[in-house]
Image (tube, rainbow, N blue to C red; front, side):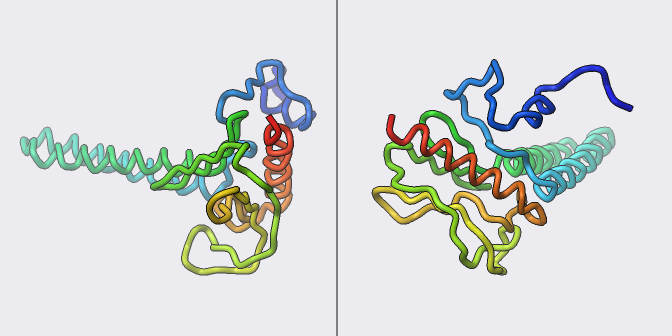
Length: 181
């Protein structure tokens, strides 16, 4: 059943290269949608957190407040990890490129970037130690070694090669637009 309203997402899909009227390049934005593996992992963690919160409530009603507090703290940590998993990925703005992982965030200003290119190399499969041959988007910096921004086998692009190509092209366009500023 088609809905009579047009969302911003559908308007963006209709014309990928046209900026929306409220498009602000000073804000950090992800140039692609989160992948199904990333969303599924976060959803499972949030489901686990709901069960932990339910157990904390039952334990609190039973009278063991210290144990309920421990369960509540564990649930809050699980929720924080789920939100960080959803936030992980590559973010771009007029100021530079930002790579967010579970434990670390690396920001590189566009002025420090010498090149952004796609290369064939061994990449990690879903962030696990196992490597497979795939594509990676490398950000080469003036100082330091290259930074791998995206791979076609991570949680956002596994089984979605077209989405990887669009995201890599989008980051390359951001680099071309703002590296000379």
